[in-house]
Length: 64
Image (cartoon, rainbow, N blue to C red):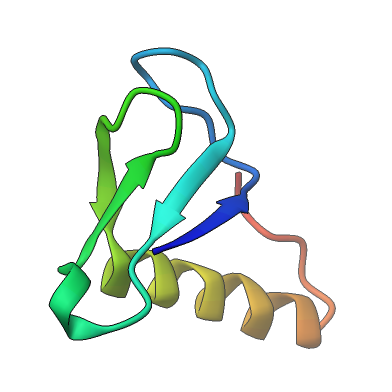
């Protein structure tokens, strides 16, 4: 697992650091680094970040 700070907030404890799986043996869930609450699936996070990156590259504001 990799511990990272994201521009997301845990809905349970309000923390902004999350554990991301770095290989398939660690599963596919993104979890809060503070309380271990489930946030999302890693593939969903990747898709959302890719969409924001594409919009930013075209000069369009990203949706919040």
